Length: 85
Image 1 (cartoon, rainbow, N blue to C red):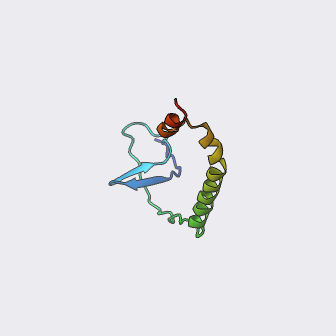
Image 2 (cartoon, helix red, strand yellow):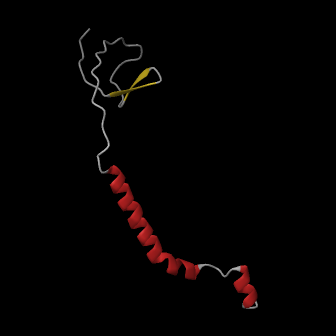
């Protein structure tokens, strides 16, 4: 039997080691596993500021387009009554 050596990234969840991608292994094939923990990926320090900037831009765009959208709304019940509709 030939020895195959490859590296695969996996996630440990609920007591099970889950590979990120499919493995080139036969069903029931026995393997020797060596575990090397990877450093935790931290969020960038300015993540909150980035999301706030996106929210501010979305709010600005929504406010800029609101008059156009409002014009396309059907009249309210009050408006329809006052117009005799």
